[in-house]
Image (tube, rainbow, N blue to C red; front, top):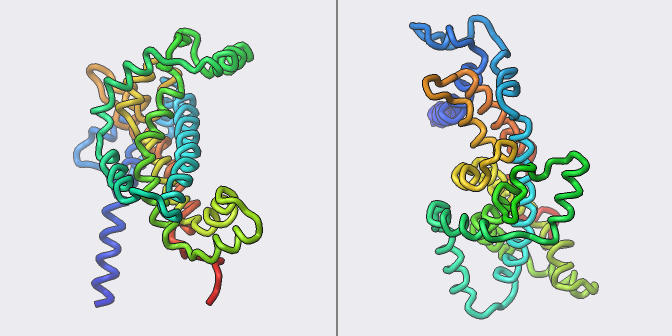
Length: 297
């Protein structure tokens, strides 16, 4: 029985890691070796020229920066809003609580494709006046927060065109995750904080959130990964080259009559590495006990 479990686990791990491993091996081959028959599974002559071409052909470093700014901002904003909503739904006696949770579940079922045209029309006639002087100042300093050709009186070709919908699309699932985590925390922790003079908000961020760190980290990772990998909205709203994100930028390497598999594999490998590092860095938080450090007895 134990052997069967070990073999089954090994097969599952291999099934999950083989595509990534194959992509990395492909990125280390030259074009001639890729089209050779029979297939060579391990590169005969390892080359890193494909990684050099990734950054020479297109501003891939800028694509990485754009994805990082959009994903991190969306994650922070979404977690903060979801924490407040989850605390209210999970810890307070709110009227129509079940109705609100049902509505949240329903809104999470809407695909981004349904919202594409309404969001585009909204962003086309929308601006954030308070940010315009800051954007102009940063641009004058050489920080191309918004490219010159894209500095139009709307949100298209700006980071906000992606941050706003990413927060809205990720907010339902993040709220549900944090609500379920907050419900399981012993109320003695919150009562002790309130007795010591904390307000509800202070109790949330000083007591409830630290204890429910596994839930907060899980929600944050889901939001970050979804924002980093999102393609359709990024392709539609940010058409200026230096405002593209990693998923859209990877498609730019394909030509009309050519598909450079090695270069694209290298670009995908570079784009996936931050996600892999994120998972490895916070895996202990994800699997940690929910009430670690809580009240005993």
